[in-house]
Image 1 (cartoon, one colour):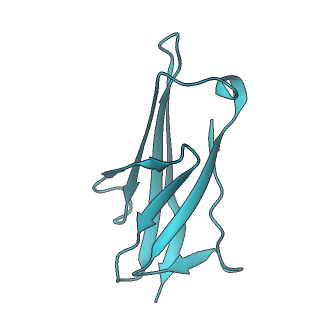
Image 2 (image 1 turned 45 degrees about the vertical axis):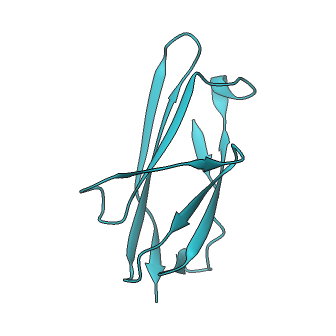
Image 3 (image 1 turned 135 degrees about the vertical axis):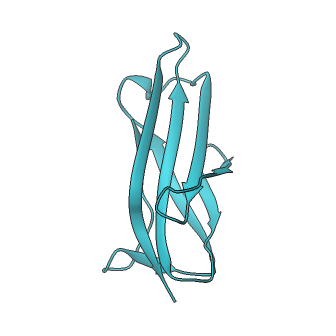
Length: 98
């Protein structure tokens, strides 16, 4: 499992139109192991379209929020050394405001 831990406001929002860091950790059976594949995608239109995004230092995503207020959805795909794959999608993980 991938746990995303963005630092949001008390109302669970982040600023639209700005770069935003989203730390993540690998938990569960895959924790402490180097996965064969770990890929991320982000959606700013409630999952209608997805864009690949790279992990920075293997510990966080660095996202560029659109200028318009909306929502951010996150997706992770983790494949372990045995070929087991987890696809985890969090639709509307948080909102952005102006």
